[in-house]
Amino acid sequence: MVSTPGRPGRTVAAASGRQVKLGAYVTFQGCTWQVAAVAGASVTLVGETGQTASVLASFLFADPAFTVVGSPATGVQPWGLLESVPERERERALAWQRHIREIETGLPDGPGSTGVPRPEYDPQRQSMAEREQAKADELTRLGWPRVSRATVRRMRARYHDQGLWGLIPRRKPSSATGQADERVVAAIMEALRRQRGRSKGTLKGLRELTGQILADTHEPDAVALPPPSTFNRLARVLADPLEHPGRPARTATAPVRPFTPTVALRPGELVQIDTTRLDVMAVGEDGKPVRPELTIALEVATRSVVAAVLREEGTKAVDAALLLAEMAVPHPVRPGWPDHLRLAHAAVPYDRLLALDARLQSAAARPVVVPETIVIDRGAIFVSTAFLAACESLGVSVQPAPPRSPAAKGSVERTFGSINTLFAQHVAGYTGPHVLARGEAVQDEARFTVAQLQELLEEWITACWQHRPHDGLRHPLLPKKALAPNEMWGALLGACGYVPLPLTGADYVELLPVRWHPVTGRGIRINHRTYDHAVLNEHRGRPCPTGAGGKWEVHLNPHDVRQIYIRLPDGQLHEIPWIHRDHVHAPMSETTWLAQSRVCRCCWPGSLRSSGLPPTTTSCTCWTGRTPAACSCCCSPA
Image 1 (cartoon, rainbow, N blue to C red):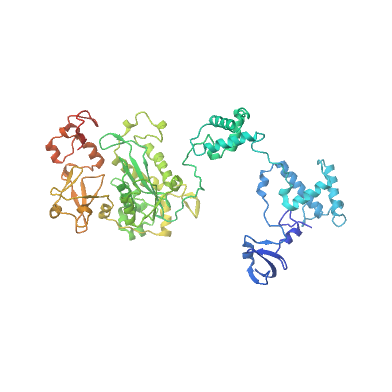
Image 2 (cartoon, one colour; image 1 turned 180 degrees about the horizontal axis):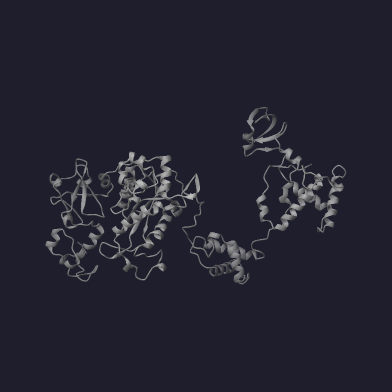
């Protein structure tokens, strides 16, 4: 017998036994067949009951149950495990391999090698037993300990059965707990089981619980607890790595399921939306410092921030709905921006895009995408009726992220960190990522209003983020070069094209949240504000023919209460102004109005109350700050 050149350590006899040749019996699809003919790539099989089948050899070998009856199963030796073996043992195994090859073939390098066999190992002159004895004597002379003919025969059998891996010395695996008392080990396992799913304690507390279990299971003081060092070692060995007493009880960064990266191959295929607090203090509408909320929409295929909204108070459903319209239409170039921030100077086929959408002529260098799928968390604003209705009207599929799975929106979560480090820390009023990094008087450093921060953020996204190379963007032809979001958008446009979505001002109004109010003789009253216009003359005091309870459909922007929009019987939304809009030259939010409306009714003159103007702190004689100092019986929202 000689070993096969392609399979070291396997003999020709054993290898030939695994061959599919005429007369061999094989197992295929749970039945036993005999090979009747082999013609090219086809194998003709004859079953036990005489049926025949012609099968492609590749299909025959691909069957999971395929075996050749009476032959060892084929397999590749675990060569990678040899790297974990100490170098001395690996060299000894390779030496045994050369000696065994010389015993069987006469040459240390096996069949196919050149040279002349030594007389004591010549297969033509010496028997196998004589060659084995000669090798045992030779190894004894070389100083190998305890080498006999039986040892040589045993090593040959292990080599034929397992290959080179069989020549590695086998040691009995040591127990992870060593010589620890089995009763102590069982008590530690029980203590770990009781702590599973509960708040984590310390190793010292786990040791005390183990002692109580030993006392309850056995007689008190019958089993002694090991010293703290030994107990800590046993606890680390027996505890699951995720349930170790020293690890956090819950973590959002260690998913229990295999991590699968999010992949998108075309612009707009997948957009992730999320909201967080920006690490910057801004000046609120009342002049006091506030920390605004930032909501962004990240296009995964290009890592582009296609929409961003900053709000002083909590983000509302209307903000998420307007985010859809903002990402689907071109972003206009703001006054004062340099020409290189225009789309005409970006790395995109501008002339071809302009032929499709004339609105891109004055657009900023930012992608315009029509989202196919939006990934959201389960926040109230994203599962609201207003947001879901807006997505349905634009044909967008909404996909909620699984609970407790931050990796489902990993791209947008990481982008928030980039915005805070690349943009927020260079803005006056930066708060830092946590309390320990915060300055002593951050509130006094606030210099920008929320609207001014919005303009700064829009300019930074266009000028910096969209032109900054992103390590997660790679072109198939340039795998070593990181592309910028605008460059990736230009590359994907050639493969997927551009689909413009025409949205008008009426479309934005349709995305505003809906309320239902009656039309009275004085107009429409909302939170003590009066809205009136001549178009309401023929509908005053009349019920709506289509509305529930006779009320009319009204759309209101909570961030600008100076006007509302009502749907009249002609099906169109008509703008109805606040009767005092001419005196308010800046947008006023609903939150600011309600904050100014908490006064004492007895101190609010009836003439001022009837005028519809919001009260101020000077109009209430018992108002100090935000808490009424007196008149508790009538202090309530006006």
